[in-house]
Every structure is written in C-alpha cells, then in structure tokens.
Image (cartoon, rainbow, N blue to C red):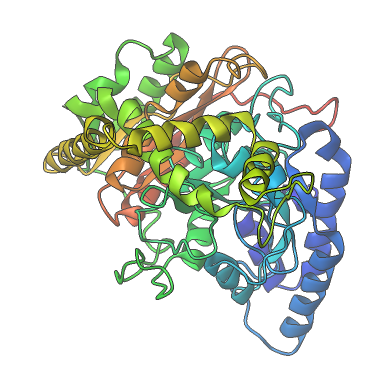
Length: 490
C-alpha cells in the first residue's frame, strides 16, 4: 500500500511510531497529485514548496520532543474560500485572482497549531455558489469515479481530492449542502457542524447566517479527527458559541441499540431517483439491524425550503459581495473614466454568470416594495422549518435520508438550467436554514458505479451522536464498491 492511500488515523499511528515522517507523507501526497491532477482538476493551487517546508518543520518539532496530535504531519487540502496567509485565496473567481490574504482563517490557525500540513487550495464553485463545481472561473473539477460526471459542489475540489487519494482529508464550506453533496457524489464522508460550532473568521462570506465550515475525509473516524481540531469558540466570530466541545472520538464505537431513527416522509417522495431511494432505504435497514428503531417523522414545510433558501442566501450574497468594488484589491478595469464606470466594468468582468444571477436575485428581493413579499416571507418559512425539526427531535434521536435526489450527473447536463441545479440541494438546505448538523456517509453505488450518500441529521450540537451513528453504519455496511480507475490508475 502506498503512503497516500493511508487514512488519517493510519498516518497518525505511523507518524507517532516514527515509521513515517511528515515529509514522507507530504511527498507521497504531492506525488499522487502530480500523477492524477491533470485528470481530476481538484486543486487551484498546489503549495509544493510551502508544504514541504511545513512538513520539515513538523519533523524537527517531533525530533525535539513535541507530542504527536491527531493531525500532526497530515497533508490536508483547503477549499479556496478560506483565507491562508502566504497562499492565494481566489474563491474560484476572477475578481480575486492573485489575492493573497494577510492572515489565516481561524480554522487554518487551528490546523497549523495541530501540526497539519496545508498541501494546497482546492477548486470550488465561484464564491461557493453552485452544486457542481462547474461555476469555477478557472476550470471544472471532475468526479474521480467517472471523469465525465460532476463531483458535486460547491466544495467539489475538496471532495474529489480526497476521493482521488490526493490528500487524506480536506476542509470545505457548507451554505446549502456544499460539504455534504460533494462528499456523497465522490463516495467520501463530509460533515456540516451546527451553526456556530466552528468559527467563520477568515471564511469569505457567501450567506453569513447559513455558512459553516466542515471536514471531508475518507472515513468517519478521520472526519471526527479533523472536526476535533477545528471546533470551538472564537471571540472574533460573533456567531461562534461557547458550548463545550465533546470528545468526538471517545464514543464512536458505542452500540446503537435503542436509538430512534426518523425517516422524513417528505424526503422519500416524488423527485427521488428510484435507484438512490432503494440504496438509501437499504442503508436504513442496516441501522435497524444494529438495534435501532425506525420511525416516520414529518417535516411539512420542507417543500418550501428551496424557495426560502434561494431568497435568503441570495439576499445575503448581494450584501456580502458589495465589498468587491475594485478599489483596494481584486480585479480592476482601468479602461474607464468614472468611479461608477470602474465599479460596473470591474464587477461585470470579475464575476461569473451564476454569481451575477444570485446578486441580482438578492438585490431584487431586498428592494423597496418587495422586501415584505419575498425576504421577510422567506425568513418566516425558515422559522417554520426550524420548528418542524424541533418537533421531530422530540420523538427521535437522529434523522436519516438521502443527501441528493439523484446520483452524480454528467458535466454540462444541468449548467444551463438553474432551477434543475438548485433542486439538487432539496434535502440539504433545510439543515442550513435551521442551523443543524449533518453528515453524508457513503451507502452504496449505482449500477453505473456512481456513489450514493446517506445523510444523517442530528439535533443542535449533537455532532458526537451523528458521528457515532455514521461510524456504526460504516463498520456494518456491506455493499459492492467498484474499483476506482483514473485512466488506468487507481
């Protein structure tokens, strides 16, 4: 087995026992990137020299007696919406091309403190706006299981990099499913924590009341190890909460017998692909076989979730993206004579079609005469969705369902149909609207060899619970896993 094939937990054990050095782990990941990146296109920046220096620094610290933490010497990919000092942060947009932040995001500080090695910045839909990573201004990312299919979005680069063994773990951001959807499409594990569980300081804002940073890895244990490092209060983020962080690894292997698992009637109705439905229902039976009770729950207002989400998210995006005016940083069109002309020309050239669409939608929803009819109404629906979950969690411990209504689709299939693309998020946006945690874990493959993800939803700050359920399922699940082939290479 090659070093790049090891999980984070396995790498941790090897580094702790000094059988592998941080430099060896880094070099193996860089070698894998060199081998398959031209097929997958998961990275916007590969920080080879920086990563090797960081790995050498880790090895020197270990030689001096520094203890090995969970992520010490582990090479990780970082979604290009997180600020990284010394590395570009473009958000997949031309308007930030060549931008180098003067500081690290809070989660990057945490990772560096834990000894992780930042191996590069991963591709994403521009400003995290998309479900397929086709909206990147630089290139689309391809699904490692089928290079003709999308990897999901907006954190498609992070998920594809992990699935293709380019790095054992990565960070993404999740505003309406952008960690969970690509994890499901790429056959890896992706988690959205409770809103406020992980600091958003240094995350370039899309929709501030919905955004949350989350880990992506190949196993549930690895996902828990990353979350352990990044979770916790940060005074620089006013939405960060002072709730104690659980030991996410301590209870992973606790039995599930007696847990009540809810199946929302609304998540298994019309619109769900038949093959996906069969695979997800089989997954719920695996958990039932572990001693869990399956109960039907109702989320009656979830049918309005997409409409509410795409009003709230675009309204917040319209406000957040107003700062990109070409005055202090970012792309500037010099061929204009007036200040307003510079604003208009620079933003027109710097933003892609989907970002422009969402800015216009959000500006319209907030405009005089329409605020009450659209934005306020969407916020009222958001409250009803939150109450639906509160009522459901009176009767069950976690909620199960599909992550996506369809398996990974072909590149270009939905890019010209915004509504069809938006509906891909139908099962994920409710968690962001309510602020709840959720995880996507692989639960099978279609006849065409494409991954399907089971979504496990928990109550507020119940990350330990959903990790425990996901881990038990991962250990018990038996499904045929095809061999991944990237043009002949595993």
